[in-house]
Image 1 (spheres, rainbow, N blue to C red):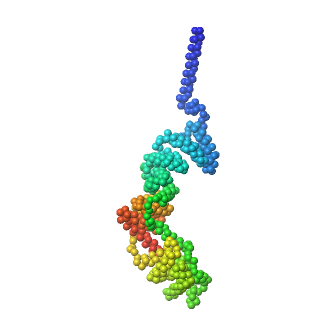
Image 2: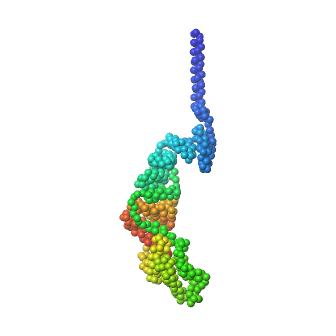
Image 3: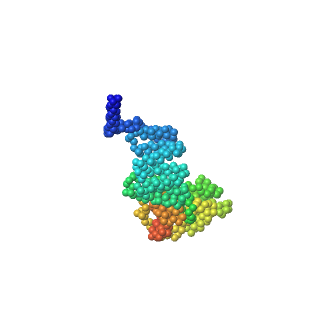
Length: 524
């Protein structure tokens, strides 16, 4: 028995030595820097894939996604997800990209739980590798918040948007465009949650942030995107929509800018639909267009008549050789319109629009002769008829008022105001905000804030509006003048009388110049 025990003991020691040598070999293999793939195979026993395989699946999935082949896209993204998990060279960002592509395809197929699970897992990976305060988390946080917003879970959406805003403000500053985008999303959630004050504050801070010049020194940790006109348009639309739907008390006031928008349509009067002429006017027009004489006793005078709107005047076929001939033509024109007025009153009544048309035609003849005292009562009578027949903003009413305004200006001209450029005092706004669409929205927003009594906020918005209006239409345009008039009203309310007076003088100078141009057209 003794030899057998010795043999067994020797066998046991041999076995231990063999095991030791085997483990040593494995450890040495794992410690070798020249064989990383071997180390991976020792642990996982999975085949190592190349980066090209999962990337091809990802590209194909994106192509299917663009053509709305969602099931095929999901299959490709799932394949890419499996392959990238076995790729030792892939980065966490690449893994997150594949996961979010798969999650997107699932959400588009209304697989809500699967999609959210992947997005949250992608967020955990970013938190682990980048830190919980990294700006790299912001896009994923906004996506998850957007999903909850779409599903009507506003509380959870608010939670993710708040975290996204907090990170972006800490990293890039509260005036960065990334923070502004997050704040806009949060404001929209407040609006949906029926928190108008919180929503209005978020929208206002966002608007100020994007319109103020960007400070690049405060955003060195991440690259800042450019302000897009689409984002600005959506922001202003949401802000205006909030103001209109809020229950805050609002006064019924008038905006010079809105009034000027209507006045600017006067340049297109030739395209408007005029009043249907009377039977007498049609007959006169037909006879003149065929070369018939207006009066048989003046057969040597051939004239044409234009009965298109208020410019109902005879145009001589040839320029008169002397003032006597011109006076003769003018007498014929006056007799013509007096006869038209008489016939229309008898056939249609004193307050018919055709009578006002004839009165305006006669007034234009007097205006061309600078007989303002004769033209003024005719235009006043025509204006009364137009106001009784049409809306107050109709083209006929507006143009008749303009003619009366021109007469008043000609009879008692105002002081000679001089325009002084405000270019150095206007706020600097981004190029994407220097267009008429933005100017219209900013003026509307400022006016609504003014009506609700938010004077300081309205003044700030009007300053942006004036900068946008001046950039889009010119600093000496009537639109800019109207915006200056609205802003001057707010300047006086906030104690800036000196600035208000300069704005008012500029507005008067612009309108004076516009009246002079109109006078040159309508008062020969």
